[in-house]
Amino acid sequence: MMRYLVVNISQLLTMAGPDQPRRGKDMGSVHPILDGAVLVEDGRIAACGFKDLVLNDPRARGSRIIDAGGRVVAPGFVDSHSHPVFAAPRLSDFEARTKGKTYEQLAADGGGILSTVAKTRGATQAALTAGLQARMARFIESGTTTLEAKSGYGLDPDTELKMLRSIATAGSAGPLELVPTLLAAHAVPPEYKDRKDDYLELVCAEIIPKAASEGLARFVDVFCEAGYFTVEDAERVLAAGAKAGLKGKVHADQLTLSGGARLAAKLGAVSADHLERCEDDDIRALAASPTVATFLPGSDYFLAKPYPPARRFIDAGAAVALATDFNPGSCPCWDMRMILSIACTQMGMTPAEAMTAATVNGAHALGLGATHGALQNGKAADLVCWEASDYREIPYYFGGSGLSWVMKAGAMAFSKEGIKL
Image (tube, rainbow, N blue to C red):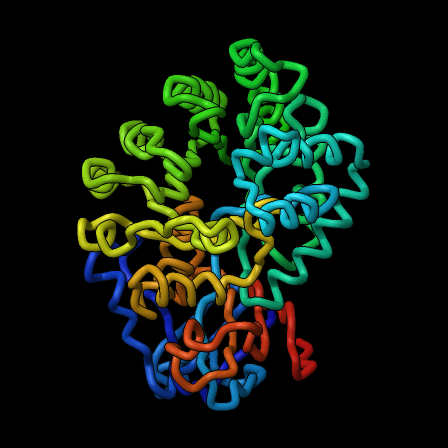
């Protein structure tokens, strides 16, 4: 039995609470515990809170001591939206945008998603897995312990399944936990140009059932956006996913007001992501639903687009999460700390709200709220020890990971100090 006791913690953020996403004022209530302690047993939290209470637990006796060095300890980030499986970065697109081309113009010129599709189709599963594993290390070193990983750069049965198998292989090796999402409805592939309905039939009748039957995906996602897929298309994809046992997620209202957010709320999707163009009616619909509103401000920063109206969402009572949207075209950022900094400086979120959005609410955006996102008895022992004495330093400083060590499921996944368990 492996048992560890983490002590000498300046501030302990447990994020503990009811098994539901935080909304409204509750998002800003993190209640850091001064001089706390955490007892870890067999990969889970055995006890957590004030040091004296934890030390009185009989299981604390004889546990291996991990000294946090007077630093902040918090749950690992749960990044609920990323596209980390691809063959190469889109450097030509990046350069073209610096010369004034828009995301939409690049797509029309053969860049964008479809340029990544061509390279990903030509890559072997082994190469995709190796690339993913290299990126996984960067996420861990930035404090992320659970990551949603999408397909969507295949747009044909073989490549979509190849991507999902790469996610399964890399995830099984750890230490980063990967949550797979099928995003075959990311764009219409070139061989189906002007035949979108035929491609949707392929997605719904073949790709979704195959991914589900092989256990390769937990969610199905769709890019509901002008020039990609309509609300009616998205509803068709989500219905096919539900029939196959996959819960729904929606890329919604990023570049235009597409209606994706209202669709997600109507269907009770697990999350609606992006949401930059949402208006008051869309915000109210999400706030009245169980759907988590997930902001991806890293892509807005990279594309020089307006940020989501975070304060309107939070004040309306929506459950808000933050995620990186890591991808090769519009957000090559794996650092959730940078995302929190943007949320605080550009979107009006408080440090407490940003931490809530990146941990417990991110877990609920993946259906993992019962086991992840908080340091609470019985939950996964996913801890980050930050090089900080106050949790507000986490979004305050940016441009470097700023952490000491990362524990995933009770195992040391990364340590600057060389701690081995």
